[in-house]
Image (cartoon, rainbow, N blue to C red; front, side, top):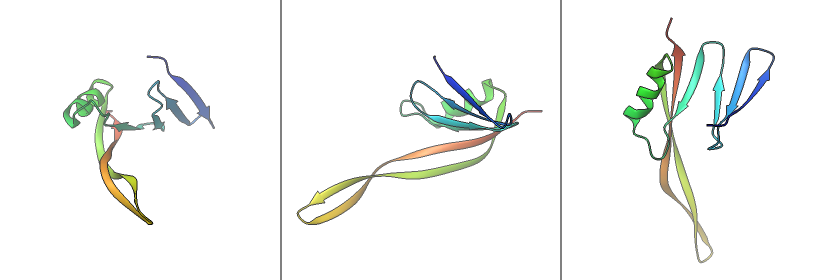
Amino acid sequence: MDTIILMFNFEYVFEISEKREIIFMGKKKLQFEVQENESIEDCLNRMKQQGYVPVRRTEKPIFQEVKKGNETIYEPIGRQIVFEAKLID
């Protein structure tokens, strides 16, 4: 997997993977996003393999804009699940 790592203030790193996902990393924290073809359990296992434990889960709805005549309707089409994790000491 090719990744690009950018450093800011030597404390924070943003990693952009080939899937164009942005993962924020601090000194001991990291965010893991559940991918489309991945279950929540798979994401938690990936997190554990990298030496992290989850501390918070956030979900954001994903909407699609549908125009019916002059009216615009926003229909839910999915959700984004992100786990904030800390490094296991």
